[in-house]
Length: 179
Image (cartoon, rainbow, N blue to C red; front, side, top):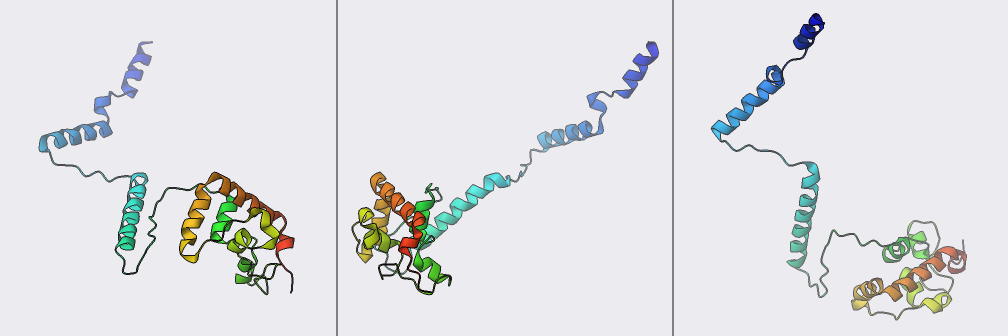
């Protein structure tokens, strides 16, 4: 039993005798005695939002101080809007619209079955196939404000969602096929 005890004490070193601990102790004593500031770089997870907010601030300053007349100056935000698929398709025009298909040469024309150009505003304001979901047609200068009002009002947003669901589900009604 005595030999086991000796063997055990020889294999386990005290924390003071480990080389890594001795170096750490020495470095901490030097840092305390010298008093020099130590530069610790920030992690990427901290820097990423800082860089994003700085870039947005620079962009907003350039936008506000630009040379062109901006009667309606939107501000930039990195806050997510949480739009669902239907709102995104309407706002971007990337959806089951003849104008979108025509842009990528998937259709020979960009007309709706009613004969007018088939873009999202047409379906929301003028198309005879979507009368139940029509909105009042905005003037060209107030189109951005009109869209903002639609997307912030719950009833209008729901009506827009139903319109987009109809267009997605009944796509064959709205797209005239004249290949």
